[in-house]
Length: 62
Image 1 (tube, rainbow, N blue to C red):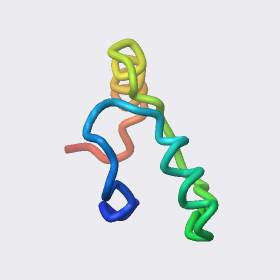
Image 2: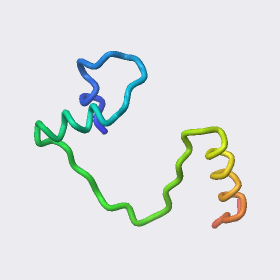
Image 3: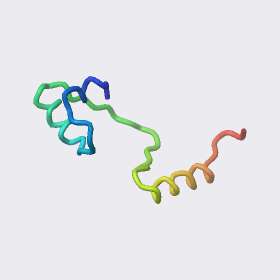
Image 4: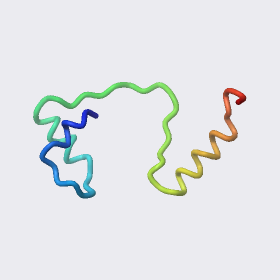
């Protein structure tokens, strides 16, 4: 998302659906197909699960 999409919005927690709906009405909402891994990390539990996944699926040795 471009930061411009948040111009004129109050700086408090809100649903991004408000922004998406506004962009859709303006004809500026776009998407893309993502064909790789995706992880929900919006809660501490989900973040821990994601970290555990990466520990089990290390693709390159450091």
